[in-house]
Length: 177
Ligand code: IMP
Image (tube, rainbow, N blue to C red; front, side, top):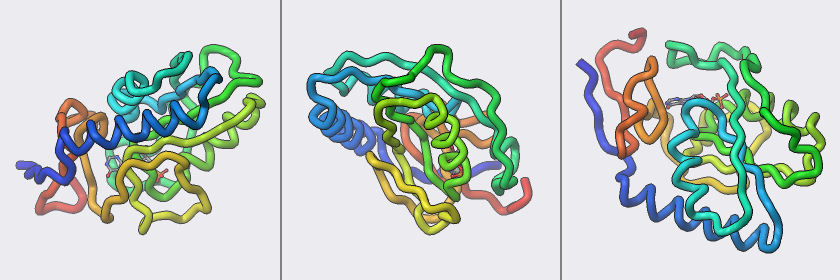
């Protein structure tokens, strides 16, 4: 049986997402934006964040394979889906659920830079800074968290728990699952 322990409540998330939305609205005042969500984990964050941004904003989505069903990063990132529409000359914010080793973000930054945007920033709800192996950072980061496996608010374990409203630590006796 999986045990879930609440790490960040829905109220804390909502307050933080509103703050990030305000910052983005101020930083891009008078300009338009494309939010690019990384499927599937960032969808819940993107949906909430987008409604806190008071600017001309559109969405797109990109998909990569990374974790699959394991807790450890394989070190390999593959592009499963690129953006649907050209983002050349546009202000892009890449929306990520969590920054961990940084391998996924490094890969995605290269993919998106190749589309020649006007600007490229990163919004990530969570950041496990202690796990970082790549020299990347988020421009808009919600919460720094310890090195624990979390689920909820879009984050999954083997596709489950994405619908939890709070961010929870998944605790179990087995490390292998
Ligand atoms: P990175 O490439 O190691 O930075 O991994 C980033 C991706 O790994 C995220 O977009 C998540 O999909 C996944 N990930 C990393 N840590 C967790 C976690 O604690 N729970 C669920 N997914 C995670």
